[in-house]
Image 1 (cartoon, rainbow, N blue to C red):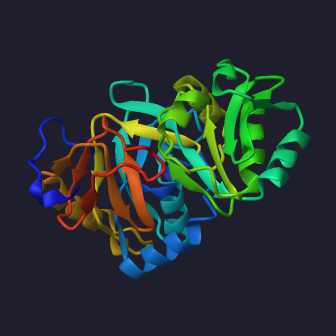
Image 2: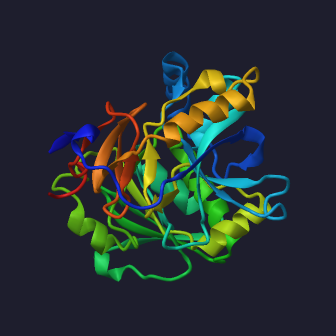
Length: 322
């Protein structure tokens, strides 16, 4: 079922904390995604707007050096703004320390590689074990598990021999590097036991010979904050933040007020007009058309839509059974 945001009732509850802040006050916690960056840069340059605010959480100065915020969602938008010469960015500020506001989850990655080459690559990584699973029920849930791999050849569990936080991130960086030019992200039912994922995959999903699906063990929020304090980035598309209080969409901030020649007064005046608009609530689960295609949002993450032309399609991913 599809619906325009304008057909939904206005939301109740707190208004999102929207601000325009300097880009150099934000520490970006993940590497930009090379499979998405150039297309996003082109789209933003042509449209002349930042569709959706970057999501950040305030941090203490000691946590990430001189930065006031840690980015939670929008690494590619930040990179594109910098490439376009912008010095400021519209943000939605949430409190990562409040679990009722934010939940840290993870994406599943779909990619097209030679599975035999990929599995061989994983086996050669240092300090890891790659274990084939004859049955999904053989999967173990422990601190050593880094990822599960699904392909036509079977299901595999990737485990760390020394399950430290630094080793986990280094391993995930190495894993994603293999297919970094082609990453598609999906939300799947996770704590990512393969038996749970397998029950929800649509029939025939893994029949393609060069199709590989990966799921990752979500990081605890305290581990994420520790990485931020060390300035250690994670690979693109691994962390996923669910905003229980609502995610601001369709703000459509003009790039002209984010550039080096723009003044803070102009930005604040424009933002005040947007804050005066009561956004429309779109309950999840749903999919939203963004710069580069459709993106999925959870049933516990309502969308606060500011622009009537932001179309929402409430359908499950084609990866999942209906």
